[in-house]
Image (tube, rainbow, N blue to C red; front, top):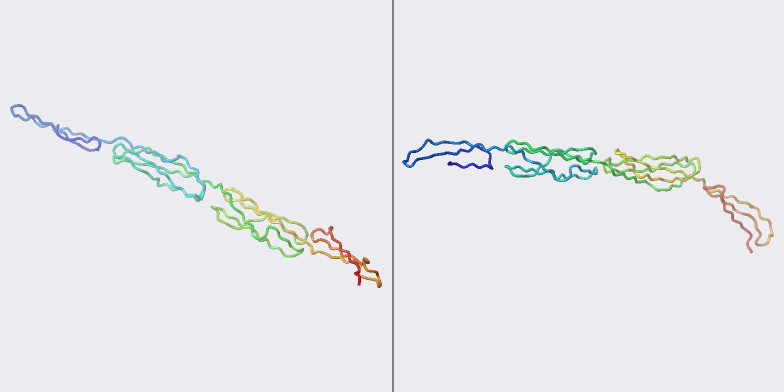
Length: 239
């Protein structure tokens, strides 16, 4: 036969057959038509893991997939689906390919689970311990929170300070993000105190007393614990 058939390339080919005998008589030529077809689907191979766990806020880089076809060769694939790394959830990335002959490969997919497991942070504003004189006005400096996804804001406090009652009060600040992650709480101590009281005992002195004579005492009561005091004695000095 006369003609070439490329069995690696789909298409229509012709083979011509001719013959002449020893006397030079030529037979009627015959033609055979050959159709090379590609009916084999390509194969897709996923690169990387089928399921990925991604911490929210982290950038996601997809490894993609790889296709191979008996006729078309091979190449890389990227999914048209999108993973929102700022929004916790389950994302499916699909990879598909159709060769030049219209054969579709079996679709493969990857699951990306975006989770938020990072605790927010709390920062207390102002001093950890505040001393407040009885009946003085008090304004809580508060605390602020910061979260990689939720942003930042002011934290609410648990506790109450009664400025009219001496004592030690605790204010605790807490915050939980939308994913349910609680921040490590922080606390402030507020001490409401009364001013110190001083009591003088013996303020009259007789004449002509000898040096060293005890003539009185001073008693100071502590601001926080009025049941605790310190005493100081004073006497006449020589000369």
